[in-house]
Length: 384
Image (cartoon, rainbow, N blue to C red; front, side, top):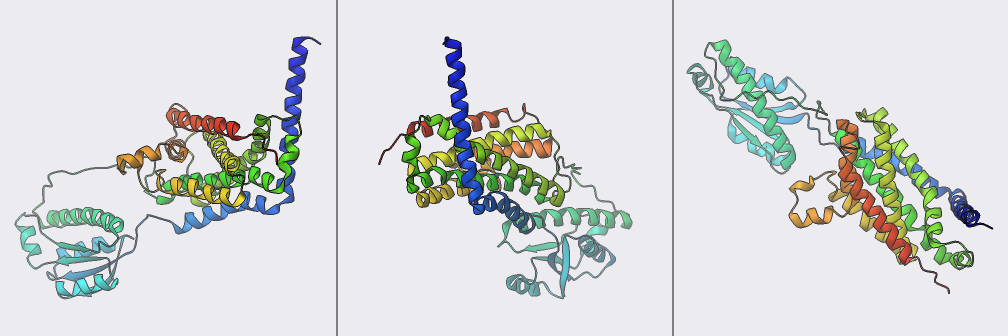
């Protein structure tokens, strides 16, 4: 037999062993409906829960008003606050001292106090002063409410001054235009981030239990009696879960687009490619945990600790990585979730291609190769 024939025969045997290993894992999955329910049902359910329950959009902020001026200008300023969905007047009081108790009891979040002399300053051409009290226990809501209130106050005051014949000249008039998310909807930003968390949990948890289950059941020794190699075992166990993971990607993207109106500005091929690379990296991380622990309970606990916390806190999903302390930024740069969050948002919201996410793909690919190398090294043939 020639050398070329021997190589073809070896490649054929490798493919046969790989297919047998993958088929064995598929049978395990089909015999356990809970795996399919966990893999395909949980991401959709969690996406619906998080997508509808978690939001950073602020509207109907309870507002208490004190109008000591009682003029057309002060009423116009109050009307500007009532005109949209941002603020909702829940109480009207006579004196400023009555505002803080309402804020303390949580009846209102913002207090607007218009003092006497508001019109007089307006007619003189000065900038009239109104006081705004904010409940700072929720600093995020307070900051956004302050920004909205400043914009409404400037617009309403300028309009009243122009009607009175003493137009105010503001030192700077900014005309902003928001790109990629004009409505500033938090769902558009949250759903791609949720996609990362869900894929991480499913991929790592599923594969973290595969090899550990084989060791606990004693079937690993039977597997070692066959001529199958370590790489063939790893890739054979990986393949079925990779397919399940890509189905999860399709489900999550479909739900995000249909129910939450999340745009896909980029190409689906780019989104699919980076998702496949990230799925491989996460599956390999779960397989490494399984190989290293060889115990299902320990593997599941380690999988949760090494995936949920980093993907939730260190990925940029909620908190920008750039605003974290330098040591935490270094730690965050280890986990591929950080790069996948950035890549998914660039592709889905900005329409970027592979040239825009090249660094992200490189970092995820290096993590995959590192996990593959250590998994092969740790995957030794232990015989009971």
